[in-house]
Length: 234
Length: 267
Image (cartoon, helix red, strand yellow):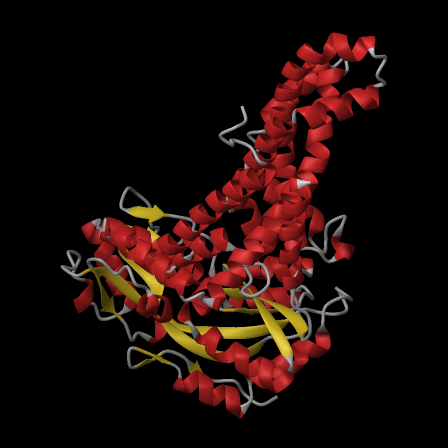
């Protein structure tokens, strides 16, 4: 209990004094995870819509696989990306191992299924409502997907935020492919793991509280900017 | 429109990427990183040589693996037999001894096994085994783990049973486990002194020469991996054996205790 109180204090102190070390790893956490979320959304949202709108032979199978991939163990994803990017692996020439780019790749793999799965669910329900209208308007397949993505944008934001939430708190994969290098690939979660290892629970908890606050702040900011949940609108 | 504003705000974050000095990746052991010596040496290295050393903190086993795969430019570890095999296999051009520190036996302050009174490290281990007192082992193929196993072997004991808990984690995590279980543990002095969560643990046995822990520097062989920064690795080696490094290493203290003894020889 003492550790938690001390952690809260330390978190407040770090934030108020704008500790440069904290600012650096917090910005890197954001940089890696926001990039990963944007890329994963660019892949996952259209993929979810496409699966919802199209009927094809292995559709049910594809949906089952997508749902199962939501539970991908990050440490396994990390290991696979590591082996691929290692200098002695197939993509070694790129020299990407232990860089923020490698961390982004791992996170994209982890959260794309989540974003695709949730957006598929949302679009499917919307498609049920819009089906007759869009068909009678002779909308092309691309037009249908575009309309559905636009009109379902609030639900899709939730899909992206779910992906963001998973990625920002993830440590298993980025520890392996990033290496937790100070001033290069250290982010909030790997710093927490490091401080726990040093037995400095106060600082580890302080970083943890900063991480939670960051996740809340990003969610609030997006909701405010996109104008959801305003009193006058339902 | 609103989404665009959000994007503009977020893209401002991207400008924070630093560039500049030559980077060199070096795999080091957790015990070296936990000692805090790196925080003293790295800024000086950057000042004198312009090299930004990026540390990958892993166990000795993984550090050597990283060197073998060519994922780092140099390795600084402490497991002589494994290092010599590493050079033998052509993964490093040579092995250069830099400094040593020592291991200690830590355990519950009450010392139920009576390890404090032991005459040697292997005797202390034998007493722990006899008492079946809980003992936490790194169990991760690290240099510290290998050193621990060597002492068990010298005591003629095959450690196994309920009392012997291999956690398969770094020094810090293993110390946390020992603190939580009030168990004995074999640790390097630096990690122990820097460890904040000592709980009911105390330093019980130290000073046996069998506990000395030699660190050596291994530059990865550029003939095997053409992309490694051999020149920077050479410059770093020259710095590590310099008089300036000697002064910093010998002068480094935690709680008034000297941790590392410089013993690099001119080549």
